[in-house]
Image (cartoon, rainbow, N blue to C red; front, side, top):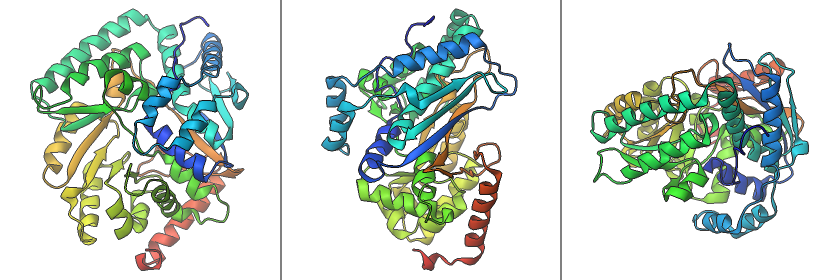
Length: 410
């Protein structure tokens, strides 16, 4: 490797990978998935040297094992079970599951294939590696980190002084961070705002489990789109328009009332609400927004709770789509008093410099040999490799939305 190791601990992933991982281990251990990398920036080009460094860094990641003290930390999280800890004690990534080449328009192609238990755990470290390799090898990194620190100080001062108010917020920036150094600077700085004695806004944690442990803040994360896609669409007997029902049902089997923030937009929020009826709306503590107009979404969710006879002020609206503190401030002022409001803030905190951040993703594109799709609430955030399957799932959703009564499946 040209660079120092980027991923140095298997805890350096997002919390929801462990949330989903435990449920996968107990309920879907035989599922197999394919994941595909995509760079949404039109003007980004990865050099052959970058691709080789990415290969070397991922190979290093595959040599890591969980340390006993790391597993002891995970064991303190009340919803993590001993059987899953024992599995992680034996787990490691397989470099053989990766296919990495320069055969892509952006110069970088990454695909992973294998058991869902394995491939799910590859996504976040891979994206963190790609980001850091790109920015360290494309730019003068010292200049970038200095501009990053300046912007970070400005944000902290605006929040600390109360000029911006972000209510309860977490840092969600691991997958698109400038570097490990940059993300650590963020969590270390905002960890001083763990209570409202120092600021009217409260920093509660980070999605990065390694940094949560290091700075004694909460590891934050529940489920991602892959959960709904694979549970709902990976079984060939399932109607994909009911993906959310299958996913919510499996989640409740695993966690009951614990660990309960539901993601709404995998096959559109309107379709999600068909299945988010009284039982699930009661059991889950809230929902997460990740695409579409956040104000329209929030009002729609609040009205849905009211129609079910649930007091929306007892439920959490977690916003996590392309947020900065200014947007968070406006959203909080709009929804304060209508529901509990929380924010997961990513790239704006972990990769805000004088150059544009990468907009890269790795998404599940197949499960058990069958195509899967993320539809989303806005164009540009969906992902599916097969246009025929995309047409099929949209027809299923349209039929359900136009013909099926809620009572048929509630």
